[in-house]
Length: 223
Image (cartoon, rainbow, N blue to C red; front, top):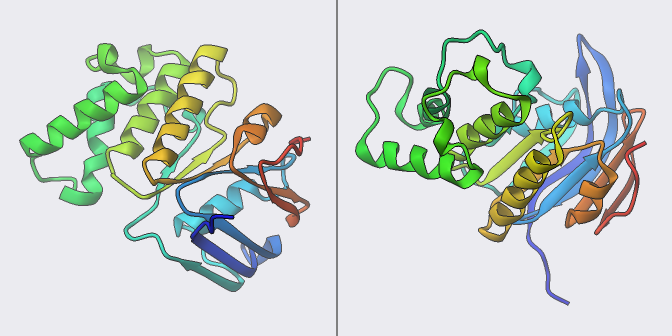
C-alpha cells in the first residue's frame, strides 16, 4: 500500500472567537496532493477549521504542523464578496499576484500570462472584461477560484465553493479541484454536498466543533 505524505497535521486544536471555543481538541491529518472534504452541519466549525489552516485564526490551544511551503490560498463564497466592487474579472484574478508582487507593483508579462492561464483553466476567459456585478453566482465563484490559482499556492482552501450554484458551475469547479490535486496541490474544501464528499480522497466530519470521523473516500453525508 502506497504511503501518502501528510500536508497538515492538527493536534488537539481548539479555536474560536473572543475566547469562546468553536472547535474542540481536533486531531486530524490532511494528505498532501489530495482533495479533502470537510463536512458537517451549519455551526459545526467548518469555516473555523479553514481559518486555522489559512493562518488567519490562531488556535486557543493545540498545534498545527504543515509541510506545505508558502502561503495557503483561501477561496471564500462568492456571496461574501460585494458585487458592487468596480472590478473586472481580469482585475480580480490579477489581485492573486499581489501576494507575490505586492499591491502597488506592475505585473510582469509572466504574471499576465499566468493570470490568463488561470482564467482559461476555470473557463472565465470570455468574461475577462466583465465587471463582477454583471456576473452570475457561478461565474463570480469561478473568478474567485482563478484568483486563488494565480497565487500558485500548494495549499488551496475553499469555503463551500459550489453552494447555491447550478450543476454546470459545480461540475467545472469539482473538475478543476481534481486536476489541481493531480498536479500536487493539497485541496481542502468545506462542503454540504454529500456527492462532493464522496468524490473526495479524504474526509473530515465535524459535529458541534468536534471531529467525529476521519477517513479516505468518505461516504458520510453533510447533514
